[in-house]
Amino acid sequence: MQKEFLNNRVIVKVGDITQENADAIVNAANSTLFGGGGVDGAIHARGGSRILEECREIRKNKFPEGLPTGKVVVTSGGNLPARFVIHTVGPIYRMNGGKDAELLANCYVNSLALAVENNLQIIAFPSISTGAFGYPKHEAAKVASKAIEEFLSADKIIEQVRLVFFSEPDALLFVKHQAFGLV
Image (cartoon, rainbow, N blue to C red; front, side, top):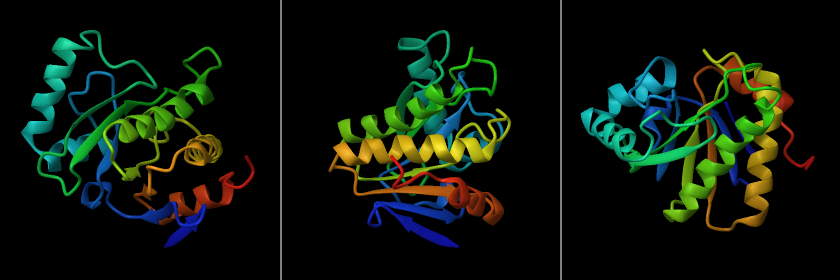
């Protein structure tokens, strides 16, 4: 299953994000940056120790209390096909004083902005916060698609954003609830 939006600048597909041949993949990290479950665990496992070592340096030098929700950092891709990993911490649903949508949008916008700063043109995202962090998938689809479209409308460096879903039902749910073209 693959669906294109915004003149092929956004691709929705099913796959394994750790296999994406992109300039960067985005990690739906936890604030420790030390790996965890789901996408985070898969990226650290497949990417190897270099990513964890770089994350430890980031924690030591920049974010000793952990990476705040909605913020981003970049590491190398280690053993991944992607050259870089952009780590972002999504919101835990209903734990942010009504700012869930704003924080989730920040994950996408800040990841794209960091990609532009590093002249990265092809970026692959997982579905941020919709696993263990409990963000309803249909709501996340609207927030993510609006944030991505608004960013891309003002930016010409990013050639393609890939939204990579682990399962076809999740990809189809995103397609059903996305808001591309409605901004």
